Length: 194
Image (cartoon, rainbow, N blue to C red; front, side, top):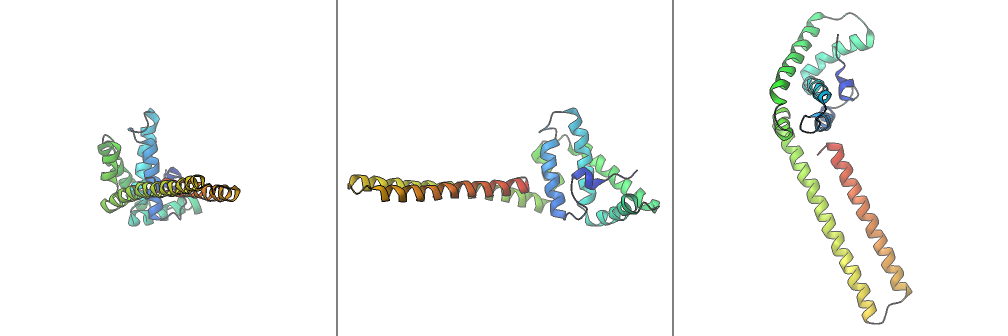
């Protein structure tokens, strides 16, 4: 029987290589023994790893896609050599999994993701944290200026309803920007699983 690696990862057959890697990271975070103590999680994680090993490699994936189309699409007979080749890859993935599963989550990602991908995702994670920190500092500074301006109007006895309305409008815009920025950055973080 041919395994449906696309279903295992929960992606479309048209998914890009980046989507395969991103989905794998998210699922690894969910099912890795460091993150999930359920005994069934390791079994699921092994399936996910096997699917990732086949679909991340362009040449393996193209051969798998031929077999996939015949088995799941056209329901035709297929060349047994494709099946044997994919079975060999699956067995190799399972052997690697047995070696890697004992690693903690961080080391597991270092080993299973390509070096450039791992470092790119690590840099993205720090970039996102830096962006959140800078945005928070900027909005804090603007809030401080608003409060100083309001206190200046109160000290000079120039406080009136127009000053209060201006303060409320600017403060509301700032709060909306804070919410939008954090929501955007956090959604970006979730998209890449960092």
